[in-house]
Length: 166
Image (tube, rainbow, N blue to C red):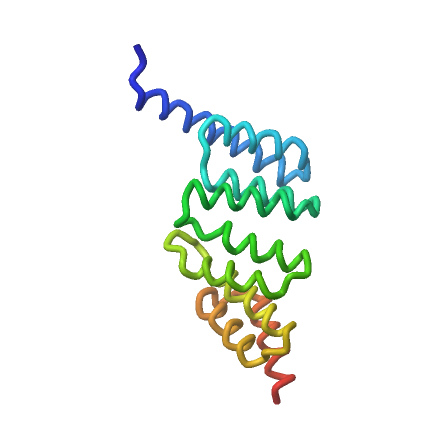
């Protein structure tokens, strides 16, 4: 019979291929196809990345509640993956919730597996600026730039805020 490890290895390879195809469809703005391929990838072998990217595609269609649900599924698969926490915060901002989003950005900053902590810092800066907490906003824009010195949006936001504070 089949070795269980061989089956899961094959399922992983198939899921990765479906994920790759989904991402290509997403890049081509073929969102319906991307959603279907991400779902098939998840059914084959669920990963936090596939759930998160599925949420991302939903967000392109302004389906924020479904995007949040996909990110919550990603967190259940791998709570160490930072992207879905930041994405939930971003979707809450898009829905006009400038308060509940903060805890999600903070959770993204605590996640051990995250490639760019600059994004939740930048997003916290945006939220604090919109809420009128300009010094907190400037601090987070600065922290975003410490993480990613070439982050043009953070540079622009920090300069704009510094001009307001002077």
